[in-house]
Image (tube, rainbow, N blue to C red):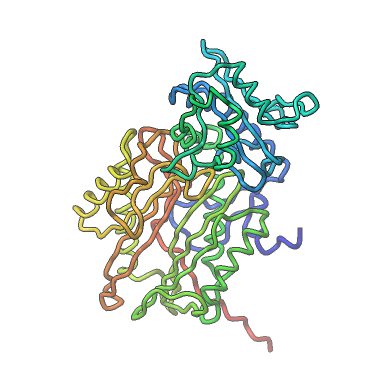
Length: 450
């Protein structure tokens, strides 16, 4: 695998240690193996089966529905249905219809697909086009035979995650169900509950996924990727993209790199990284169907320096303090808006200047569930009204404004983001959090031969 040598060197394709750079004190020093695709598929399908067997019945009963119908067309994917496809099914095929039916009396929830083919022994096919050519008519027969009282469908004015049924498919569905169409109800709670809830098996692996992201960030924030006085912010952005691609991983957004410098505002693009700069990165990967979202800070050492200036270290400590205020405010049943208000009050009471914009993470980067503020709006909002549930993953994203004495009192935003999970009792970071700067030293000069 010579083509991966540049990134394999720091251990992501094996158990080798991460590079010898100064990392945040609580981050794991080893990067786990990126699994072969076949093994990834096995794991993801096992997770999916467990979710279908255990999570769907509980959520349907909590929502008070006895049938859930999901419809998607190829390249017009329902966000929920897309997460129910096995690892070898990348998209809906022509039109894919999934049906869940709860017969009650404690019996298992039936699941089937009104499609030409079954889905990986997870959804048996319930449609033979040779016997009934009309797919919609066959769906109507299935529903009529089971006589459900409340049929959930993915339509929602409030959440894109629960609004995957297109208008044309909704019209066709109502026609196919005939009199049963009056039993249709929105699936908001059901759809969001499916997407936001993490299973124990997923949570057992999630720290490894975050650890990989941390290792890539650390490698980028080192002389492996940065040569002070020559490397630009955009150079580092594309180094991160190449590192992700070289490891057969994916990302759900373009990485961002910014430079903060004494006497200057936020810089980026073709600006060259210099000694004395503070660097910021916003970075995420997608692996095993789950996403990460991380923001870390680095400092480029000047000649003779052994660490970042005290004022910068104090700024990071302030951001850590805002993190503490956010995680301490988590309570089952609280809305994102309530967490936002409580966290801001606690942080301000400590003399901090917070901006809080945390969000759920999981199948999607900005995932289903309740927002906890927005970077440009620190007031409660309609998107923050969803109640907090246990077994949910979060990106604790925020910043603290702090004046840096060594930079003539310049106020700098210290932006941090770490992935965590809430088990119903407390919040735990999946792979630690950054409390010290990544340090980038000047490249060592080569000795001249005689």
